[in-house]
Amino acid sequence: MSGPNEESTQLSLLIFGDLLDSIIVDVASESHRIAKLGLDPKLEEEEEESHPSVASVIFDCMNCGRSIAAGRFAPHSEKCMGKGRKAR
Ligand SMILES: [Zn+2]
Image (cartoon, rainbow, N blue to C red; front, side, top):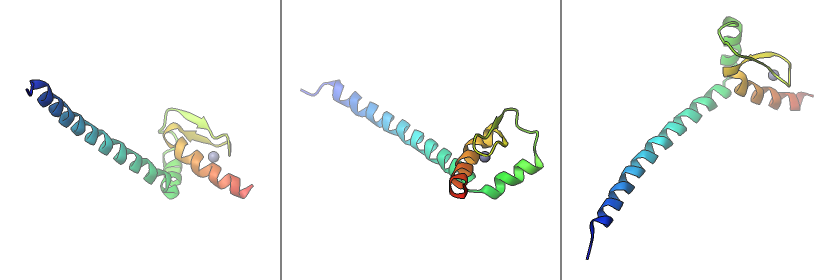
């Protein structure tokens, strides 16, 4: 006695797996992009010099006291604190 339940379970598993796949790819490429930004200090400094007024939200870095645009705050603080701890 094989009812229709088994079939629909397999189908939803397939759909779920597909969905999960695309989510994982999304997250992976996003974190790859962030890692790239964080690991490229030259790019960050260049942008700070040439476009000082582009960003709308500014944070003060609690480590070095500089004003950092919201979009660059995470990679900056990571880099800045890593360096600050070693230097001081
Ligand atoms: Zn800093």
